[in-house]
Length: 196
Image (cartoon, rainbow, N blue to C red; front, top):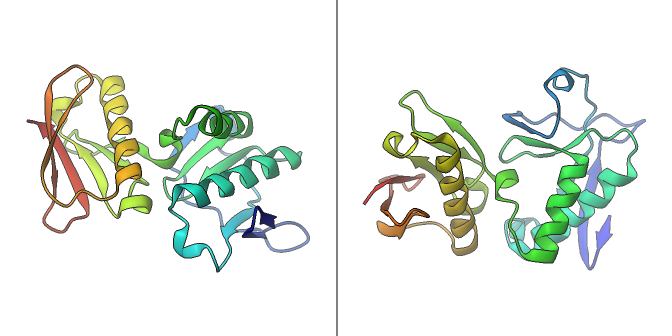
């Protein structure tokens, strides 16, 4: 498939073999009783000449635009999955999300990064590493209100997608005005977010 000079590879259409089903961690806009349905996956991938730039926002916009148009054209499409975060979103919500990004510049951060609590009560992202090589871990002390902690995590995700990996400790201001400290772990794979 071609889109404004970009080439994408499509796989999984019948009568061919279905594309592999990604590991799903989060379902958005799809009722619980539909999660167990038998799914046949169609895969959309970056063509070889743009694969190296697949995490750049201009290439990604083209990719998501093609995915949105494809999802609408396939009558049996139940949802769209962003494999890096393991997030499946309903077709209608996905199209709205892509339209909003194109019209208002609002990054689809909750598609790009799913959130889960770890055994210590910290809130972790899955999917940010696609862009930066790092995931976030929000300190349990900041997760008292899960909704607010999720908004905070997604705000930081959006900032890091735009600016890149964090290489040294930094301070940031939370929406409530409190000071946060963002510290990359020694291996550089996680950004720890705590009170500053």
